[in-house]
Length: 570
Image 1 (cartoon, helix red, strand yellow):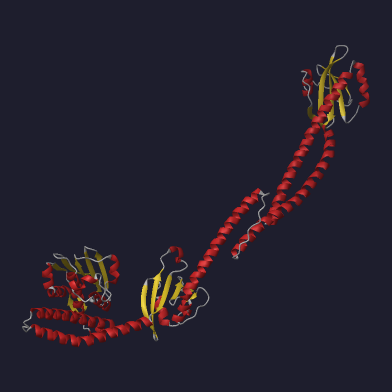
Image 2: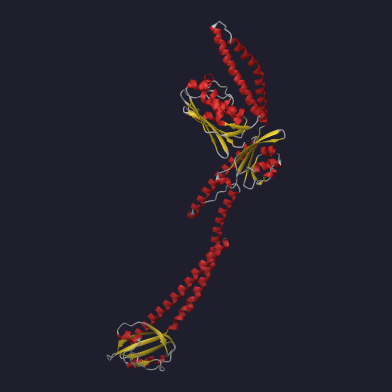
């Protein structure tokens, strides 16, 4: 860079000095010609003033055959009266330019080639009057080469000046290039220090306004960049600290199945090791089957559980859709150890099942005794009402225990092993469920309809439990005079069952929790509406049993729509 700038400065200087030298030579040449012409006109005037008569012509005989100049005296008609060069032909000169100008009293110097001297000559002629009254023309001619004497003196001096200027230019160009190179190098060093994670501002000098403004702008820009880099590094370090401390394994993968990022928990849970950045995922996962399952679903959002020895892992794969980082990170894999949660769930389910079994027998006995007592006349009206209340609560408790047992079987997988799958007519099942709820439907004056029909390969008991729970909720939470619609639709791949009502509806924020066991939106309505609080939990598990998708849509105060979409050949 420095060499290039130096050569460019040197070339510009050389061209400039050569141009100035050429202009100087031309100027000297023009000036010499002007001096020669002025001198020639001055000397011609002197000669003309010295001529009084023809006898004065002989005074110039001493300059005959001179090679430097030529004196000619002519009459007004152009004939030669006197010629200093005796060898010249005495022809008429009336047509010569200098003679014509002299006769017109506009004398001027004229340059042309002379055959006599065989060189360019400069002529000057003027008209004068002798004492006799005769008008003659005096012409003086000098070789134009006389100018070379001026140039021969001037050119060496100008050449010496040219060499001196060029040498000085080389010196100054070198100094200037060194200064510019130092300033550019300073910018480079400042940028290099920024790239190395430290900031070194440029030294500014207010006596150099051009560089001062530029350096200030560069310093401000570098300071902002350094501030952003420092902030990003701090945020990066903070994020890394958080990701390294979480118990979940987090892995970021690119499209080549390389681990761009993996925390220590990921290596611990997946049984592999963390290697250099962008190494293959295979080094991080010890189990080949788990590796195949994860890599087989990298281009989708996917969730599954994996049993690894005594540990149960939850693996969630998320596909990145943000185009700005997609070329760097295409998928995120989050691995969670859910062994403790599974054990707690299993223990809770076991307790749930055991408690249900233990409660079933005494509740059955109480229910039988209350029915026996109700069949007799106790005589006391107050006792009869209390006995009737006892019987209703016993029935509700029996229904709760029954639902608890059903849910327990579904959660433990017992229902799947015990079921027998046959073709189930969904419209008949829906009508049967509504028929069982006929008393409550009539009491609330609800209009219930079944639309569509389809067959589903499933356990009739499980499907009936699902439909009955959906219809029961539609009745219990409906408004007097409302409507219930059971819609059944079929496509090539799916069978859809939807139960809609025009009841009280559910607020949006409560919908995600509706399938939790014993969850009620309004606790004060539980006794008025009846039910056990396990209906939708049972529905959810029946759907899971048949790989069905459950969706709930509701508008508060307007109604609810629950749909179960079954794979046709589940």
